[in-house]
Image (cartoon, rainbow, N blue to C red; front, side, top):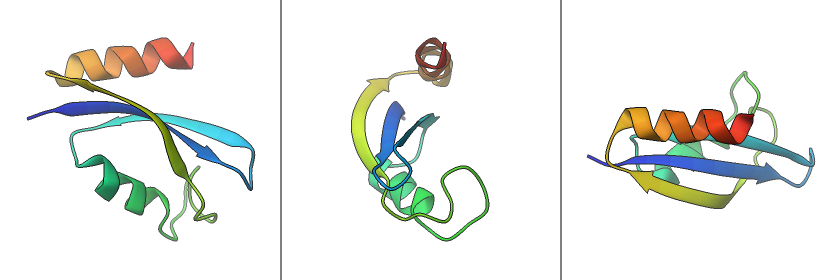
Length: 69
């Protein structure tokens, strides 16, 4: 299993979102762009601007935290 740390960008909001997932990144993007409550909900224009793959969940989460700092 692979784990991906990623950064999304919304042009409408001019905001970035940093996350990590074990799900296929395209499937995860579809969920972010669905109509739901939460930070990425409401605007369906999120695009992937960066990804990095890891062998463990811990490493992906560590990288996510590093980027958020």
